Length: 156
Image (cartoon, rainbow, N blue to C red; front, top):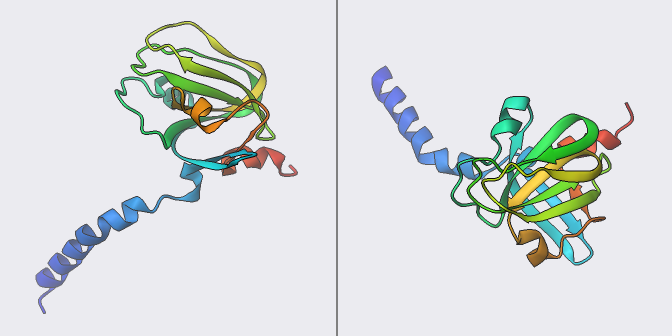
């Protein structure tokens, strides 16, 4: 077999198997909310730096019920979020360094600069589709698990 045919075969094999790899998400893309009634999993986009956090979920027209964005900060502090250029209502879940939910701003109104604030120091924020937290019975005091949040619980 010629080198060109081998390369073409390899490219076609990669293209054929690409959806399989794309569907297999790494663990760091999965946030789990633990409630007394069960675990609720969200595939999340990560916002880890100032630019990603500033852009957030702006300009999105839809958000699937099992999707969201997880904002993770380098230190625990009071947090404030706004919805400028965000087209859909969101539930904004503020999370302490131990993973416990501090508070939830439910169905935050889109396209406003109104600050939505944590009631204490938060190290992470999970944004999901507006109304989804109520549908699943997610309330303050429940836990969010994710490797980047759990790292705060490890001895330094």
